[in-house]
Length: 142
Figure 1 (spheres, rainbow, N blue to C red):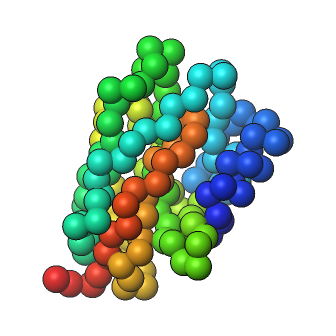
Figure 2 (spheres, rainbow, N blue to C red):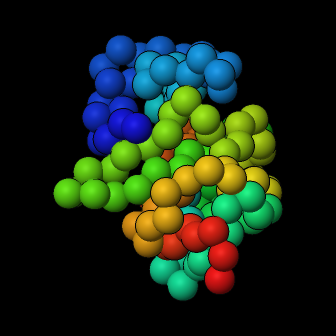
């Protein structure tokens, strides 16, 4: 798990431009920056009322109203993480989704079956920048 601000800073400093394979993703290859136009989507779901079951299929949704025309065909990545002691802990080795069109405004994901139950999970949607969802809960059962 990596801190989001450190991840973005590292990518911006190094300036890499290729997505890595999900199985070998590194903080340096997770974001593709192909222009000076940056889209940081507002995540609409999950929200603070969300409770996801481990192993279930869920939709991650975001607002596309501010998506620049130049980014209509951009693809994205969704990462799962959690907030603890003021840090974002992101699982970059196992993205929840990759390669989906950002202009869709949603993507279906499968919640990992083996997670620690907690109520401070977050999703991050990356187009060429990232945005963090509200904290939500993942549990084994309702």
